[in-house]
Image (cartoon, rainbow, N blue to C red; front, top):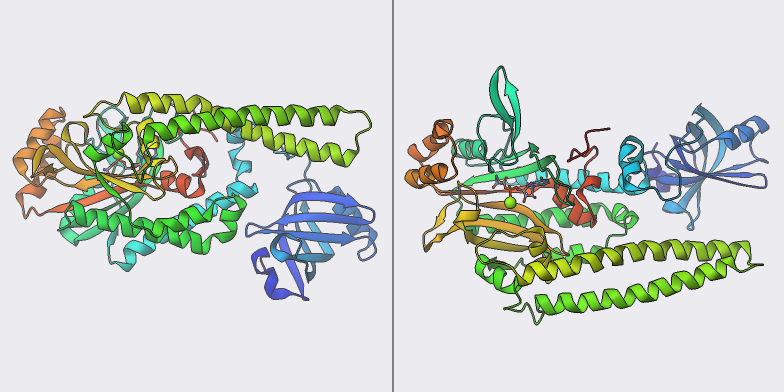
Length: 504
Ligand code: 4AD
Ligand code: MG
């Protein structure tokens, strides 16, 4: 019996097992908010309905005490989930005291140090369930289309995505790396199976703290024989739409818990704009508008709005703080104002972050040099102008991976495609059509100063039945961050591994 099913048991006696998420007492009553992993429910103990021992035991319960209780399910629309339990039996497994995560706000470092407990809080619960739905939908999408799931090795001898962020390790005395990507193995398997996808952990030593980089992250890498870059983009679009719409469909209550604007996700059903690198650069630099919106003017306008709002919020905080300090203020009114002040302060922190960021975005947009790869700021500037993911393709070959196919129409470009998520999120997918010409791949391997002999097996794929093929990689945590609209990827994975964080 689980809390999520309470509605099916109205009027009946049930038993629940779980943990105390919150407790409140008033004369002769104990109100528990019980958490069982599937949801939350209010459970009431009335001193008139239970014996004294049970009632006193309930009063002793601290946050996160574990227990089993039985009682009657009663409809009450004001309660979480619409039902509550009138308790008549209680068995306590463990009484707790001083649970470290209190209601009051904690700093991020404190919460990260207590990640093993933080996962129990409602917001984290919702994020992890959405992550689970995303994983399930990804498998469904590919399995329904008869892609073969393959597991690529995690110990590798060769680099795939550049040599700067490789995690070096040792393999029976030989140097080896933790895999940055399963792609090269995926290409081999695609020649055996036609269409495949990997779903596994990948490792990159990203020696800086950013909101989008983990050292260990999960990647989904489909690879398809006989797909060119345009077939690839069609698949990416279908895929991202399928996954987001399934989340909207199946995670209504989780999205509500985290306050996600579901309307934004529903828009992902519209076609994704496809921009060449050249077009994207013109938009970033403000030389081309998007539906009347200009990147530079929009940023300047946003900055002015942020500054005006900061002044207003600061004023309101000080007004309410004065009211709180006024002698003779009623308890309820103090609490009400304090809550408002807390909310305003949190809004102020976000505004101040925007006030710091926007000038940087402006600077990088104005100063963007044609030919460069996009940095985080460039992606933010570009994606703020769109409501759905965009696909940027045909990149200058010099800034992209060695395996990408040169554009037959202009050899300066490679047939790579990046998908940038809207609302300022930026890159969630990187992919492209693969070079099939043996000599061209060889030249690229030399240009990237990679050891040729380690790539001989990969070159065999160009020697024996080479065909047009394409693929892409979706970063699972980037996807979760965008779908949940989280400020940082650290909350998208149960136990993040990133620069400066190996525990818990
Ligand atoms: O763009 P990337 O480097 O592409 C590849 O690895 C290709 N081999 C994929 C392919 O074509 N099969 O990485 C793909 C995606 C990025 O778009 C991003 O979402 C994610 O992986 N990613 C990271 N996510 C979290 N932390 C990091 N350090 C990441 N690096 C890449
Ligand atoms: Mg990339």
